[in-house]
Image 1 (cartoon, rainbow, N blue to C red):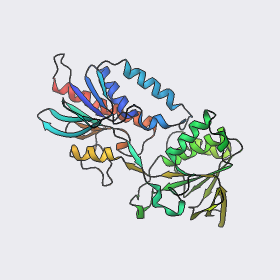
Image 2: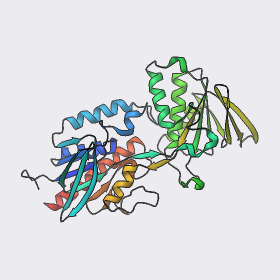
Image 3: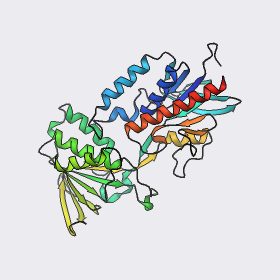
Image 4: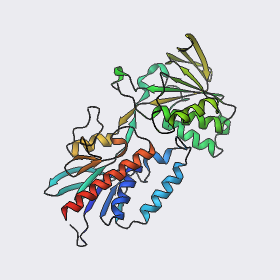
Amino acid sequence: MNNNGAKTALVIGGGIAGLEAAKQIGQAGHNVILVEKESTLGGTLRQLHSSFPRWENPSQLLFTKMAELGNCPMVKVEYSTVVTSSIKQDSGFLVRLKRDKNVDKEVEVDAVIIATGFSLFDASAYGEYGYGTYTNVLNSLEFEAKLNAWAEGQNQQEIPKTIAFFKCVGSRDRSKGHPYCSKICCMYTAKQAGLAKDLLPDTKCYVFYMDYRASGKEYEEFVRSVIEQKHVRYVRGRPAKVLPEGDRLVIRSEDTLMGVPIEVRADMIVLASAIEPSPGTREMGRIFGLAGDGYGFLEPQYGRAAKAGERIFVAGACTFGVEIQGAIQQGAAAAAEVLALFNQDV
């Protein structure tokens, strides 16, 4: 315990869940060490253009969260830093941090929150779709960069006439080791297709899907508005093959609702790759001795909001695919459990 009576929490990961957790604990008067492996905070949120289901601005949200954190002197951010080891102590952990390639230091902390985010499945495993072979086949985060550029008036010479979106690339596919639904792909694909139509009104957009899952508040209405108001065409069918044709790509599939084969020529294809645990999530599970869920995601104990082990808590996409608001809520829940623990320690 520090001289001021405050405890110390270690938050690993500076995405939106980690930012919320660090802010809440710091505002409550406890010390926070926020460890981020990159040179900036924000994680995936920093890459996004708009959000669902209300088309809100992620950049503005991140600006607000960063300002709140900046007004919280109890939070110290360690940039370009990773956790390399942890030793359990009587009432906390002795954790070794490594910055860049050279600097190591040890810190004593009373609780740990893991918020290390997710990775995207490597879509090159689907050779028939051409990811990694054709430069105009992108994954969903790569397409977010395109949306940001178009919104800023950049790359106007590269406007595609037709964009096709493939859902469930790696998700719900036992042959690829991912029998699970990744939860958020249906919604962010609808968001991306809708944004493409807003930014590029003359561009045709197709979404190829097995089915779509819109299970959150206002989610069904959001998808229907993209289809009916923004005129994005949804085709129920899993594409079988992508073939080059000059500078364009020919998509061969079947419209299973109509029962007919379909062929679409696109200038760009966007793959909604499955959500996977990030390498950092897997490594933190190993370092802190957490079993995970069988796929590598970490998860809270049954009946707990965020507790995953003794003095260890989890938040955000290290637990599974989660939308922005859900990540914020999970970060707040982890902070609340830490604060309850600190109150018990007094």
